[in-house]
Image 1 (tube, rainbow, N blue to C red):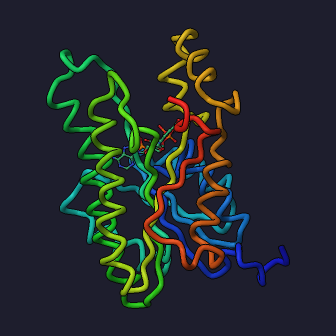
Image 2 (tube, rainbow, N blue to C red):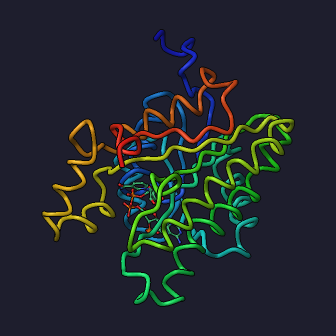
Length: 255
Ligand code: NDP
């Protein structure tokens, strides 16, 4: 790689990363900044975002926003671009998890998961795509999951939502390609993050089972997802669209 001439460089790009203050989103921000991009972190907790952006330095900014505020998405996108400049990469990463047996799961909990992952990504994509299309240059990157491909017990909302994320990638690819906007997803395996630790730390048996099901025998790190996000967003992937790339240590092959 030779600095700014590299096909893997994100020099000149600006990424808006939902859920960018923690875990995978923060890892994506770190990798993208290393590749030369500017980033804007979005989420609901201002103090957390400020601390995260400070850690990342002068190529990072932040903005408070809730992806479930479906009516406010267009105004949100306008505010982001007025404050920071055009966004060429949207990372639909914000997410929540709800684990409970199906028969005990309340509709409200199911719906909240869908509203965050599915409706949230829909409105954000719709809000940012027009300015990408106007410049004939953009990339919308979804963060999917192994549950985009396989069923997982006790997470019906999450599995349904991440399957829908796969559907959105497939539906949007052909529509946005002529407008100069690529659409891809990364399907992470088990990645070290707040969400994952909340799900497995209290359950050592489950943790061992997960590691047993991951051929590479370890959890991934946010950076593993970040580096894949850099590749997919860079000129090196300029002919890559409509892809859902597993980054999971081989886990999805062996369920
Ligand atoms: P975290 O819990 O660390 O991150 C989730 C982020 O989403 C937080 O920063 C949170 O910020 C933000 N968020 C949640 N709800 C909203 C909302 N309504 N509006 C705006 N931001 C919101 O988990 P991860 O980093 O693990 O998860 C990131 C993504 O990766 C998710 O989509 C998750 O499903 C996916 N994923 C994670 C895997 C893992 O093993 N960790 C595996 C596969 C996929 P705030 O609360 O401040 O709003």
